Image 1 (cartoon, rainbow, N blue to C red):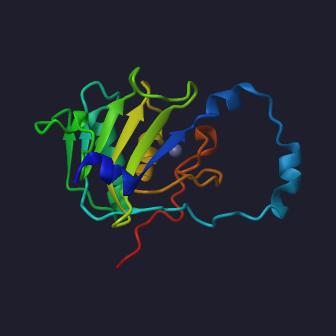
Image 2: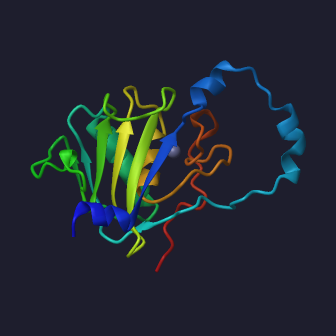
Image 3: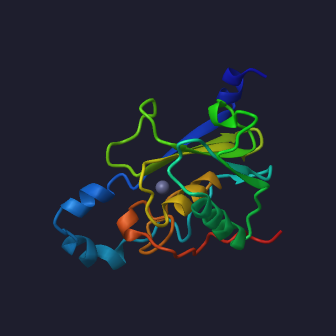
Length: 194
Ligand SMILES: [Zn+2]
């Protein structure tokens, strides 16, 4: 099947992460009216939305120039393993099959340094693209773009997108879209037992 047809049968989802966090830092707090309405605004989701799951067991590849150390990526993969997810392998700056340059790295989670060719909001800290095959509703691959100086929780958060999760704006939650409001809360992220 040609790539064009495959794209037509699937959805490429772009998740821009922490896009407002830097703006938010530089603006005075204007939380008053929001807080006063807080308990009257129903939460749209009571857990992080997961729009697709992996069928394959993904391999993680950290590409040349990606601004993370081996211990950072091992820690982030371990974090998700502890929540019940499986990874086939983690390859640190070792890519014999050239998956880092592939347009369709099926079965892989690819980690890159953001480069000039990648469209990304100026204030965003990271961005993850993941491709869902509509025929199977499964994630086929994911590509993570990181800016230099990766902050705490960013890599784990992006791996969360790579596993099919969207944002969940609970205070201190790993999948909060604002880095300043996020943290290590993993409510709703543990893999359900089959
Ligand atoms: Zn995000």
